[in-house]
Image (cartoon, rainbow, N blue to C red; front, side, top):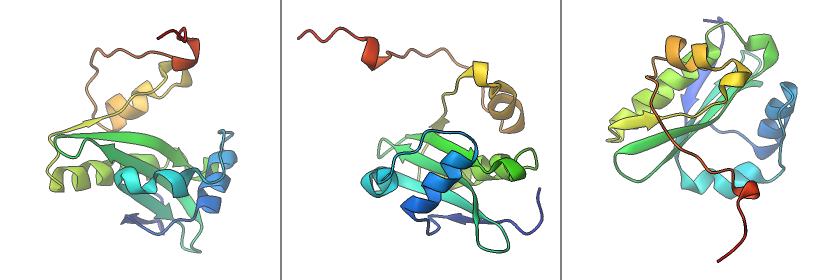
Length: 141
């Protein structure tokens, strides 16, 4: 684990910080996103360096009962491969368990090389699941 990184459940983080964090690793950011969805989250975990800069984040959505869902795991490139992402996920899972959830889910693109991270480093078990790419779905009611 990278020394000097502080993790907080429901830690303060501004929308602009998430935009910067997302763009730091080439992700597509959307200004106003965090302010729009924060109220729907069970919680989130922030990671900050000793100087207070946001270096990691994960959001946890839920169904209000047994299922939590990891979304938007982000780690600044200069802090990747040092355990920050693994600790973000570990804390998200622990707090989800404490909230009464029985399961925590994650989905990811294996083509992005995230399989070893989620399945090995974080302990997720592979499952069968289905998705629909909604922009490709015919718009017929």
